[in-house]
Image 1 (tube, rainbow, N blue to C red):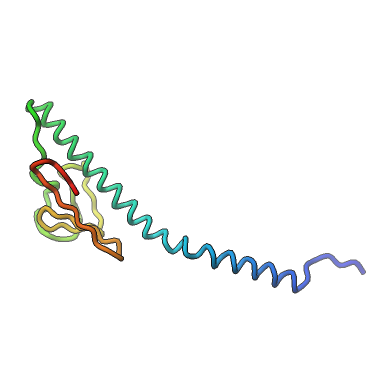
Image 2 (image 1 turned 180 degrees about the vertical axis):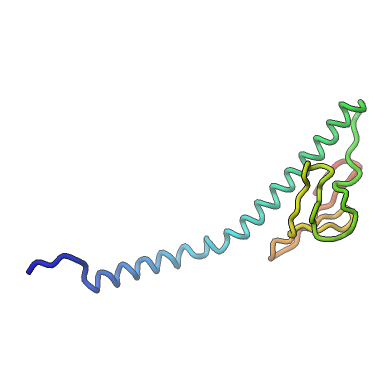
Length: 127
């Protein structure tokens, strides 16, 4: 009789190889959430810096002269998690619990570490 199929040893070997491949790829997948958090942070920082520049450019066109920077980055004056931050320089602001505001300092917590950025209304820097 001519039977076609795989032997038990061949199936076990394939399962073992797939297990080894899964174990080697697992660290890359575990780091994806941290990478996504950092990309989100970098996107917000870039948008805020662009918003500051646009605010100054608009002030130059409207009022002439060298233009001024916004006094604050948002209307939310209470130190708390960002439910509506950066709404002065971004059209809709952001609502991200990873960001918190305290005065002119904005902190971003990705779950592993906290990074703080300060806004300087004199020269428009957000670093």
